[in-house]
Amino acid sequence: MPSAEGVRSLLAPHLMGQLEDSSVCLDVLGLEVIDQGRRFTVAIELIAPDGHWRVRLECDSSEHRIFDGSPPEELVQAVAMSLQIRLFEWWHTKGSERQSARLSERLT
Image 1 (tube, rainbow, N blue to C red):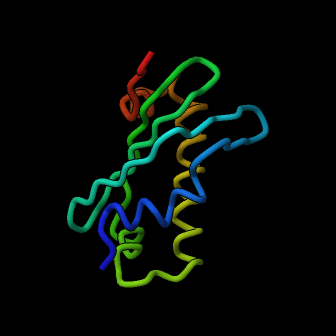
Image 2: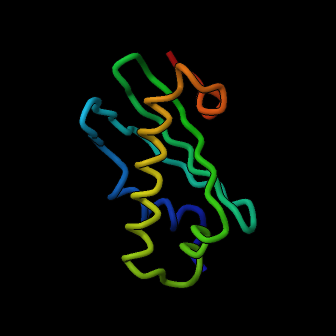
């Protein structure tokens, strides 16, 4: 069973560096995986157009399968894609939705 650090190593190549959608570029500087039993949280440190942020994204039991043995690459890619989608959703809604705003803290 991979540790939180092992899962971080699996996800990092898919999440670190510049992530872009059609309207914004987010530069991911750091990634931490916090295992909470049947769930886990990914804390992402990034530079966005409006500053330096830490965003915490909760992952559910279906995504927690990434901790099982040697997860298939398709699962790793699916979890990473889900995190990217939720990161861009956070970006686009943090100013208008309280729930999105609570996922993050401004570091600068």
